[in-house]
Length: 267
Image (tube, rainbow, N blue to C red; front, top):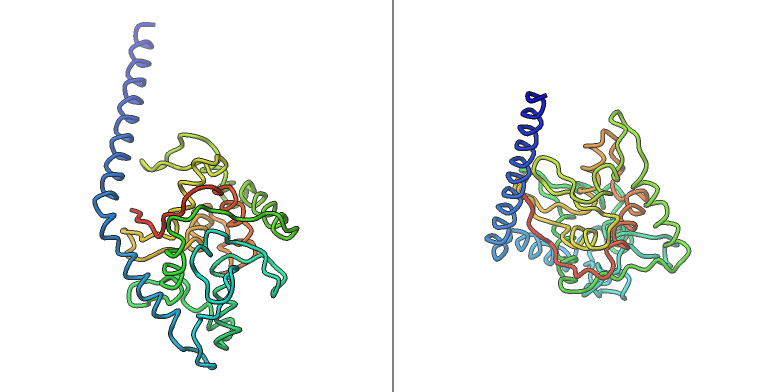
């Protein structure tokens, strides 16, 4: 009996030590981000993205300055804070990357393959899409998220996104909700936000896209969700797929009211 009591005491001590270590790790990560906040490399992506946005390109040799992101042709200020949204000209709900691809095709004359080429950059193979996304999203910094679910297509996208969030499958029988639907969850000393809770959803969603220090790249929401599917051992969705748009709609609408603060800095 005494031995059992000693074992339980030891286990409790280890658990407390682990929690303290995890807490310290979280605090150090927060300090690290704070130190680098004034020199976020994402600013370089933002500057290149502005150049690409304004540059004449494609078979039609026009810029993207007439692209309508939902607030009128050429208006980028605050546009990201209202995406995804229903677009009358396409008859469907689109997120930023899907809409950007559409504008590159319709305005600049690129093919779908050309407009979605190299969506995620790597060493020696930079992406044009990630800088443009960084530039556009930065124009909503300080703006409150205000994603509409009023239109029937927006409501439909939200509900499909919700189903995808809770859908379990793959070799590990995981869902997005496995890691992101409960409070105080951690993995590898990393806090996992509860994306079904408004406060956590607001904090997490409004920090993407982000510069990933570990990858040396700005990563968009499309990349973040694709990577989650990969870790769940799901087939990775096609770039700019309607499934990803629906999942983004669910997450973005849950973050309504939160102040957008990206592109942020991540480990």
